[in-house]
Amino acid sequence: MTTRQIIIEEMTPGHLDGAVELSRQVEWPHRREDWELAQSVSRGIVALEEERVVATIMMTPYGDNAAAINMVIVDAAMRGRGLGRKMMEEALAKAGERTCCLTATREGLPLYEKLGFVTTGEIVQHQGEALAVSAPARVYWAESGDFARLEVLDREAFGHDRSALMKRLFERAKFTVIRDEGDIQAFSAIRPFGRGLVIGPVVARNGAEAKALIDFLLAHHQGKFVRVDTDVSTDLAEWLTGRGLAHVGGGITMRRSIVTHKESKPAHHRTYALVSQALG
Ligand SMILES: CC(C)(COP(=O)(O)OP(=O)(O)OC[C@H]1O[C@@H](n2cnc3c(N)ncnc32)[C@H](O)[C@@H]1OP(=O)(O)O)[C@@H](O)C(=O)NCCC(=O)NCCS
Image 1 (cartoon, rainbow, N blue to C red):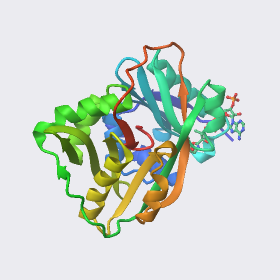
Image 2: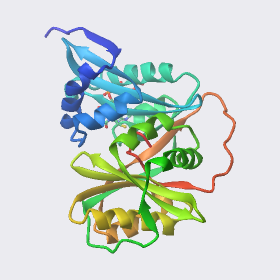
Image 3: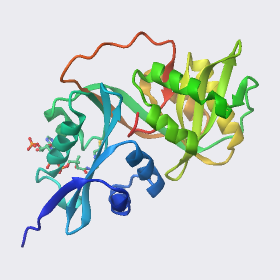
């Protein structure tokens, strides 16, 4: 058997079809558009064997201090030979001194632990057909003039600057808001993703607001296939199941810090649903 040469290079839009094929192999639902969104805000890397994409990874910078590592896939036939570790090392080098976060599958966990990532929590994935619910009265569709405020709220809840990602979402997602004395205090978004639609981010001051935002979107998308990813600590999981969105999986959240960055101020808002497991 001959061992073919593996070339590692920056991911470009020309690699996206190969990346989609790889994610289909591991039964991830990502469409080309979902890869494109991640790629447009990330520094991606691919491994090529005779121009075929055999491994992918992305480093998504969130300001100077943080990054998400995501879309880590090695072709099934190439696993167990150090390629996953090599891709991680390349991505971590691009991240520099940023604190890196990721959502790990069971398969990825040992690799990440070996590279110094520690477990911080757990994400649960809920999905299904949106049931008939009534739309809460105090939720409204966002207007284009609201976007600057939504970016501020996302940064406060997430703890890092995701303005590049939010700008992309403004082009692709529909946003809803809750106003309090004229000021937006909570918001949610829905966009096409994978097999249907995904709700996220959902940023709110409390669980009641988060539920109202999600209910508004479910009410407007009755019968559609909808997915929501949430941290177990939000306590939304049981409620989502009651809304017809079954628990179908999830992942372990992990973090790796090599320098201590200044802590952000305690937030009045939190993220109740993720943009995606990949992007946080
Ligand atoms: C996770 C994945 C990327 C790993 O790729 P890979 O090329 O097989 O990884 P490597 O060969 O570099 O192995 C990585 C390390 O993990 C270790 N490892 C792998 N599985 C392990 C296990 N079950 N128990 C303990 N260690 C394990 C390896 O020994 C290796 O350690 P070393 O570098 O110290 O020798 C690959 O399995 C994959 O694509 N899985 C499907 C998609 C997925 O789940 N991706 C992760 C998303 S978060």
